[in-house]
Length: 386
Image (cartoon, rainbow, N blue to C red; front, top):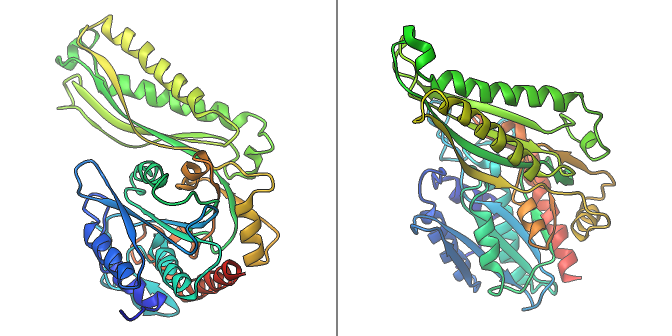
C-alpha cells in the first residue's frame, strides 16, 4: 500500500464526520486497514454498545519505554454554525487549512499516524505507539478505558505526548475537571400558592447561587505557586445550560442544568465534589420539608484528573530536546494527559494549532503550524532511531 503524506492523511480524517454523538467506526475501520497495509497490527477497544472504538498500535522493538502519541478521533458538531466551506473537506486558503477538526485535533492525529508508519518503515530503535480515543469532547470519557485496555496488550510506554492545540508550545500542567447533571424536582401548584409548592427553578437557582458564591470566594484567595501559573489563577464552577418549568404561573416541577468544575492541580477535586454534594443535600432537606416528593439528583457525567507539572519529567525533557525551547506553560482546559499521568506515564501536551480555533465555525489550522508539527515528528523519529 502506498504511504500517504501527513496532509493526505488529514484529508482522509476530516472526511469522516466523527461528531461525538455519532459513531467513529468508519474512521477506525479505515485507519486499522491503512496501518495493516503497512504491516502494523492495531488493537481496538470497544465502548459498551460497540458503536465506537479506540485504537492503539506499537512499532519498533517489543519492549517497554515507548513514546506514545495520543489524540482523539471525535469532533464537536457543526449544527447551527455558519461555515463558508464544507466542514468535512479540508480547504486550503490564505495559509490556513479549514475543516472541522483540523485544529482540534485531526491535524495532530494525521501527523501521529504518519510518524507511526514512517517509524515502522525506518525501524526505530526506541518503540513508538499511537493511542486514539473516542468521546474526548464529551468529557474525556473514552480515554480511561482505552488506557486500561492498553495495559498487557502493548508494552508499557514511558512518555505520552498529547497533541491538543498549543501552537507547539510545551504544556506541563492543566486543571482537572468534573461535571454533574443536576435534576431538581419540585411540586407544581398555581404560583399564587407559592409557599405550598416547590419551584424547582427557584430552588435550582439557590444551587447556582452557591456556585457563584464559591467562585467569588475562590477568586479572593491568595493563589498558591501552582495556581498562580494558571489563567484564571483559581478553581472555577460554571453552569452553561438550564431548562425547566411549564408556565410563568406554575411552580416548576423540574429544573435541569449541568455544573462543571475546573480545579487547579494542587487542590483536590474530591473536596469540591463533597462541598457541592453537601449543598445539594442541604437544599433537598429544605425542599422536602415543604413537599416530600421534592429533591435533587446529581449524576456525574465526566471527570478529568489534573495534569500536574512533573519535576524532571521524561516527557518534558523529550519535548524540550525536540523543540529547543526552555519554557513551559499550563492551560485551564483538560485533556487525556491527566488520565495517562494517573496511570503512571510521564505526560505533557504539545500540538499544532491555536485552541481559540477549536469548536469554531470555519475552524482552521495554520499551514505553518502543520509544517511545524511535521518538523517536530521528524525530529522525534530521528531521536527514536538514535
